[in-house]
Image (cartoon, rainbow, N blue to C red):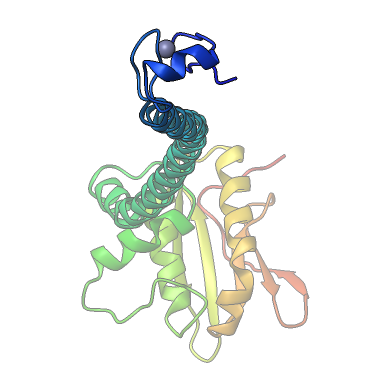
Length: 243
Ligand SMILES: [Zn+2]
C-alpha cells in the first residue's frame, strides 16, 4: 500500500472511500505534487553541493595561485635588486674611470707650480713638462716621437732640479750630461741614474748616444749607449762622490 512521502502514513483500502487515490488521507498532501516538490529539493541540493564543491576547488586554486604569485614576485624583486646593484656598480666604476682620467693631469699641473720634489718619478711629470712648454709639439709619451730627449731633460730638471742638472750637448750625436749640485746626496744620484736608465731606450731612439755623468775621480764618465764602451773625460766635475 502507498505510504505518504510527507507524514509516512500508510494508506489503507478503507481510505479510498473518503479520499482520492492521489491524496494522503492523514495530512492531505497530493502525493504527486509532494513527490515533485521532493524531487526539486533533491535537485536543488545536488546543485548546491556541486556549487559548494566548485567553490571549494576554486578557493583551493585561489589559495595556491597567490602563493605562487607571491613567490615569483619575491624572486622578481631579488632579481631586480641584483640588476640594480650591478647597474650601479657598472655606472660607478665607469664614473670613477671618467673622474680619475682628468684628475691625473690636474695633479701634475699643480705639482709643476709647486716646488718639484725629488721623490716624484719622471713619468709623473710628463704632463707638467708639456705645460711648461706649451709651444712644443711633444706628445705625452716621451718614447713615441722625436723631442723625447729634450723632454726627459726637462723632466729631470723639473723633478730633480734641486739635486741634478741635466743638459743635452754634442753636435752630431747628442750627449746627455748630468751634473750634481751642492744638495745632492748619493741616494739622489742613484735615483736620478736609475730614472735615466729606465728611459735609456727612448733617449737612444731620439739620437742620444752618449751619457755623461760625474765619476768618483772628480771627472766625467761617458758611456756610449751604442757600443757600451765607457771612457772618462779630462773635464772636471764640480760635484761628485769620491767613495
Ligand atoms: Zn500524509
